[in-house]
Length: 424
Image (cartoon, rainbow, N blue to C red; front, side):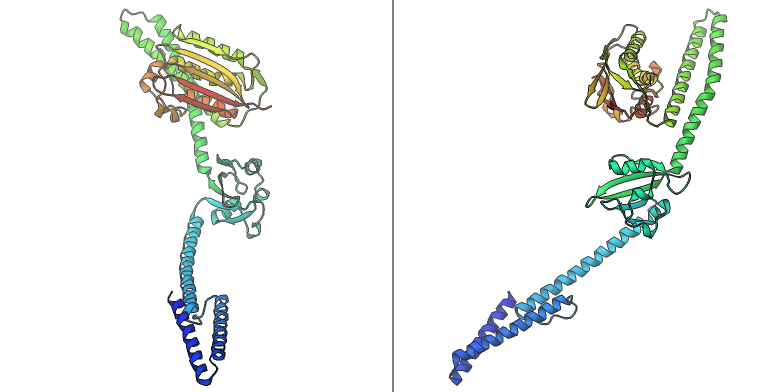
């Protein structure tokens, strides 16, 4: 506002001076016009100098520091100073971020919308063997593993990908991906060789120990059965001791067998492709075995069409569904209704196992498929559960690209849904 007022007073002053000077010589209006032309020429010169100063990047001092154009020049100068401070802060933030990314152990890779490599850090250079000439090259032309190409083409980044290193033999990488910006993709490569080797060592250890336990447990069970037959005593404590020893040995053998199976499933984690088999005979067998285990305390029903088929091994299907059904029997010793049903739902075949028993606490549901996890350890001890059954179910479903969902709450029964994809 100050500049506008200054400019108004300046224009009035020139007009008044021109008019008075014109009166003195007898040509007042001509002098006013001449004064206006001079003021216009001066204004145009100021505009020219101001725009020239702007185009030069506002590097030199403002050409004029009073009036409207002075205010404009000062405002632009202040804005430039603010922009320079903002630019400096941004450069410092970018520099810190670049230093942080460069210091990470994970390899960071940024791809453009055509999957061409745009930016990478030192870890990515080491893990993938990148060179400056690789900039702009499509990532699938440098990393040729089929699983990685499929991962990038599908662009379903909900899960991480594990794959062998394309450069270092014996190294395994985990790849996380996410979309950002204008259809760009960021990839994070992590070296999981040590974790994978430790996991493999654990599996082998569990499998070997379980195998080694089989022989001594078999020997012990044989001797106990022999001693039960030859040792006759009126002392009820002796018979009870032999009975408990036999029960615990059987339980240890069951745990050993489950550990061996679980170790095998974890080792052979590739998807299995088999010919379709009818569901009804396997589910009937499971229902009959559940009725025998129930001893009349549970009402087991089956709803399955004889036309339903699924690409799965019969033993794997029996083990997966059987574990859930037998758990429903064992964990509801007071009795309950158990319903087994199978049906198509879209492009999935779903097998449901529902009961109206004691249910599972909601806080236990996320961990129910962990090995050795027990939602109720006292009840499991009574029923002889190993805590491995649901872990086996989970791994069996993974072998066939299936999915397990569980819904339950304490006192309201439980529902287990085994969902298998149907490939038509």
